[in-house]
Image (cartoon, one colour):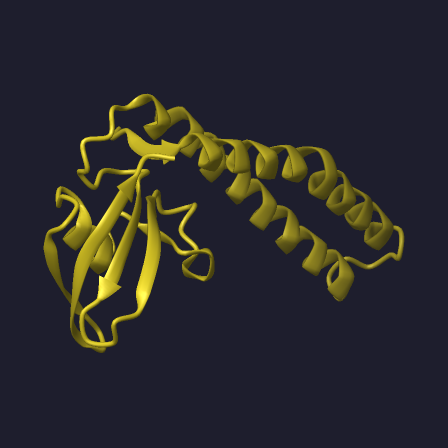
Length: 158
């Protein structure tokens, strides 16, 4: 069983989701199943089958989150000395050399990744290209839209 790196915030989000599933979603589904059961014949009861399917989804997510938490290797980058190297959990500010656009990414675990919030999976093409590089280095990334080149402007451990 491999350890899964996760940030402190990522672990907090997972635990919050787990609490919601156990204490809010699960009781609602149990109530929906009981309500649908009271309508009679279960063979042709669409509400019952939908509620059972929702229950299965919730239970599988609870199992997945418990597994992730059990395998979590929590990394708090604020406690690591910043030597300008890109590591898991660090925030990287870079400049796209073709468009001169400045971007900022934080390298996180798979469950935390959200490109809309500039949180990228550390094993994604951009994440792999950035890991291990230092402030001031040039980085070339093969993306689905072609090769992109970046200059690392700053690395923060926040």
